[in-house]
Length: 506
Image 1 (cartoon, rainbow, N blue to C red):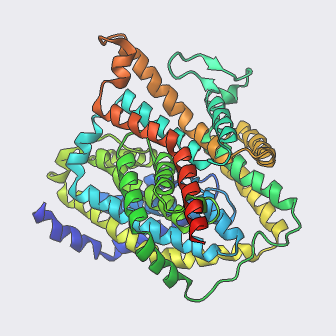
Image 2: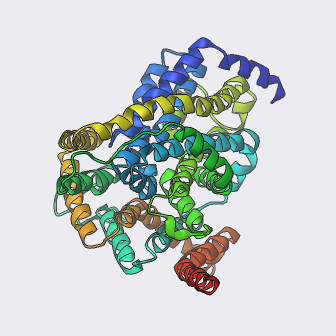
Image 3: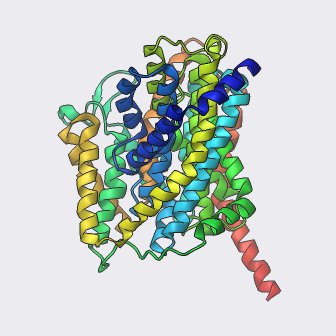
């Protein structure tokens, strides 16, 4: 390793590498902020451009786009309650309320600094603990991934403690929607109603666009507002946010970043699960959980630090084992192989300079994210000063373009429309769109891993119970799952005790 450090650091000073990092970050942030244009799409579109570059230059640019797109999704999540990427769903829980309270700049700066912090922590684990973490990730099979996804789904109980019944119903609707399409275990079509476009199921991104973006347009049009939200930028907000994060959110940021790295290195998990779990754990251990969902800086910090830490985590199995931890990592893996580079442990010896240049570039990318993101988020915040009618038209147009661009299917257009009305009228009835989105995201993963467990049970003594409860990792996840279920009652008990103490003190 030591013989590659100096050449790798010298490569970072290459003007072309610096330019590619800045350009990739800028483009990635813009792509991430546009509903429907995911990080995977942004990186995939630029892979052909890397064929004209050296492997080092191409990898550095793709890594910068990846980091920029994951962070960029927070900007639209905060400003228009529309997660630009699925991993920013949890950011809407507190980012949008902050925006509605006239504190859009506070939310934007929180997401920026938290994203950079999470990205640096994830890269730190990639640099120093890649081998050990990759070996740990190999212990995750069908049962472990099933319990992990179920644990992620259990966060609905913490997300909606005041009205858990409607939260569970919302999550169940999301799970039901996720069953549309081919059965992953038998290949039999379900609930497609002979519509060919539904054979592949309901795509997550059009569903998210409908639930969060289109429904918000319907809500905003129904109000008497002139603008989306009041926006009064205040001098010194960036410094105050940085100071608050450094003094009050250290545990939240570190815990969420570690969770993001851990979840990111598990193949098939991704930023959606990481951000939801990190948000849930942040709320669970908070001194005052009631502030979450009402405009909490800690909530935004937890979500954003986790989904950006996923980047470093997803690259760990990709570089060390050749197993991508996310869809974007799979695209980067394809780009590496197109350049004749085979990922695996030998990549750190046979092409060590390339590997370490890429890793060190991720540190620099996350540092560059702060000034570049600062300029871009101030520009994006001016969206709030545009009349609501024009913003609504723009959101609808971008939503439909983004949905159609995924698979060039008119069915995705109808999905946006249907889920837009579901989100709008469901909100009127008190349903939780976040819980519904979580069900849509996690449903296919739960079903697929349960199918693996059922297949494995035929060849194991003890059958299904032995498969589901056999591993030590499964036992830990089951314990965490049970704790998640009792958390709402613990939170209510804690709230009553606090109120009792305050009454006695008065």
